[in-house]
Length: 217
Image 1 (cartoon, rainbow, N blue to C red):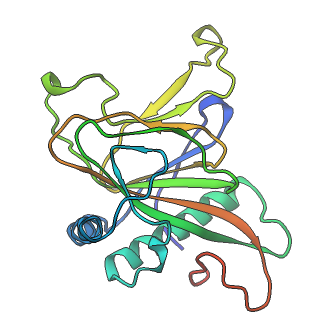
Image 2 (image 1 turned 30 degrees about the vertical axis):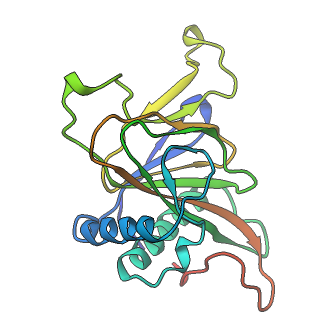
């Protein structure tokens, strides 16, 4: 069982979990190298990415050791968040049916989208530029993860139209799959790399091979 501290935010009265991966710095270089290699050998999938590169959604099948470590940690920590938030339906288990890497170059962004029908979604930041000079920023939301209010009453009701979080290398956000979100453009020569994933509750069926089933926590 992990000892990682998990923060629970409630923008718009909805749960958003935030945590930092332990031992991430020891594996960051290998993760960056592998994802950049994938981009050099695989064309981009077109989803919400506007100018960025998006891998296939089967990254969880990779046998590369650093990716295998990352996927298992994301599954473990995501499962902890889910069981804290709600009960697993009877005769179901948590699965990771899809997982993919993203690379955004300067000016790239991700349009507003949700991850339905999956109940939960998440993102882990692999490499971001932490030393972006103030004078080079186009806005104070440069590269941020923005969640969009489903009922935007306004600031006077403490319901602003969006709430945003600043990415950091090794940081993970986990949130409901139906919550609309987007990624603001960042403006730096260094690419921004992340791994996104979905979590869902799948019925337990004999000999079924759907999604990702790591060892039990």
